[in-house]
Length: 317
Image (cartoon, rainbow, N blue to C red; front, top):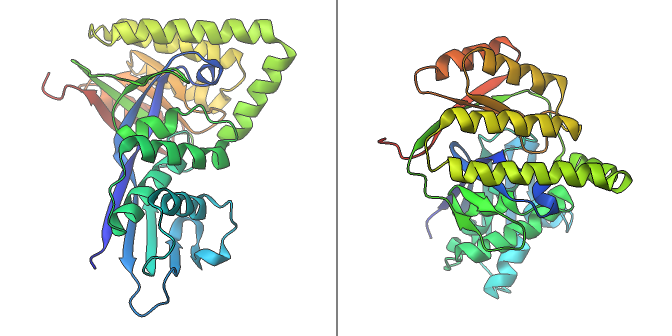
């Protein structure tokens, strides 16, 4: 029985983070340059149902029996087995690795879950449909984020840009134009569950203010969806800047994120904003291929610990 490998990309939110939890639209896209990977290999001679887990990022090398029942890894495997109706299976080893920055708003948790689900199901002779992988990954997201919007698991499962409104049919975006981005990591770990919880508390205390902020984010996302069809990068960048101001008003930005956004704009980016939960993690800047290196250098000089350049859409435009 050969080893089975599966991987899943990271993600960025172009527009609408936090507001998406409250029914507003958001736009997200995969980042193929970073990926989570799961490798399943048979454990010859080991008892049936034995599972060994190896995850160097968390210094983890245990039997699945040693993990808590609600651990994201064990839960991913449990729900996959349940979906397949498998009660007994050959022993296997699950090795995990990832180049997605952790706790940075790039969906590392959802990517690991999706990779595990696909690798384990394929090892057991089944190929789950995207819809099922998405549903299981969403259940695991509840462990990571409490009340997840559903956007991370969706864009990472389908590996396509999406226009997303919670509870509505997912719209895959077929980009006719290319858009270049530089992503910069502040190096500050940030818990999406905590920032989402803090925003909820603030909304409960001042619903009128926060509903207005959420609606304004939704309006920007709707306008950005139309703008993506026009290749008007100046306008798209302006919408990013407006979205960032709203996120600052929600108190989910940080001095480090604000500094990086300013550095990107000063270096010639069309627009810049945080992406994801905020208060650390990453920011994104819309650039051209010609100035991407200049913007990347400026971000590193301003304190970023790492940058990633990615291109969305038509590659041959």
